Image 1 (tube, rainbow, N blue to C red):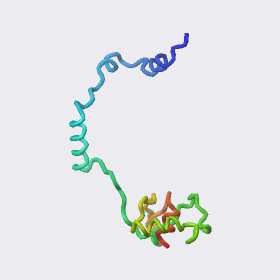
Image 2 (image 1 turned 90 degrees about the vertical axis):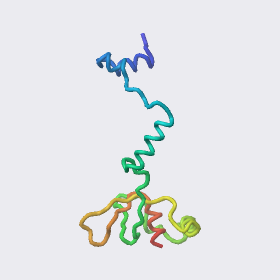
Image 3 (image 1 turned 180 degrees about the vertical axis):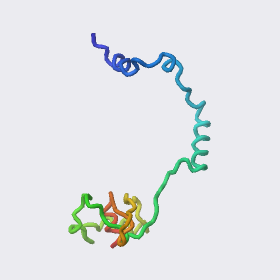
Image 4 (image 1 turned 180 degrees about the horizontal axis):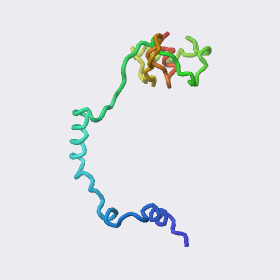
Length: 122
């Protein structure tokens, strides 16, 4: 006989101790408790919500496996992004990069956002 989702769920818990299943850990008491805990975690530094930092685009290089054709990036092909940068006075969506070690010419490698990096350099 086909058990459907009940059978699937039962197969996941099969072999677990009955006590562990019947006495799950209770969730926090309410919305205020969870908000208080979240604020406490933020204040203590346990949770970091933003790791954005400003870097010199000239000290960055594209990752060797990035998905853009650098020769096709120009003032014309990036005009919309250039306009966005100029109107906002900053880059709204940051590029994703990683720090490089042992490279005298570059500090970071752009993983995602090569077009944004090119525009910032422009």
